[in-house]
Length: 94
Image (cartoon, rainbow, N blue to C red):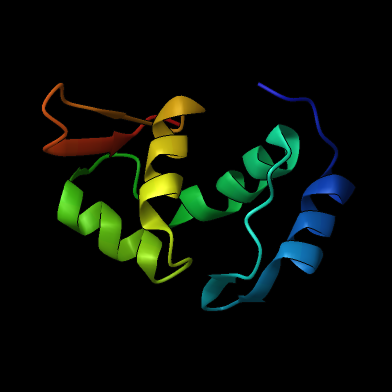
């Protein structure tokens, strides 16, 4: 979706996250590219070959950042996850 360098990705970690282990986001940016780079870090908590309930997705995101609703929606909108039409199941696609 966006072109970026390894340096840009690392800079996002330094400037927007409180910690890497455990992963904790301090500031969720408003600019699309920065938001996308934050999502790249956060999607790593989800396995590629698993389905998750909405409750499970919320819990994993909430451990990283309190506004789990926005992040969950952005995972879908930015193409990191898909969900069933009723929103009951989610799965990682990137």
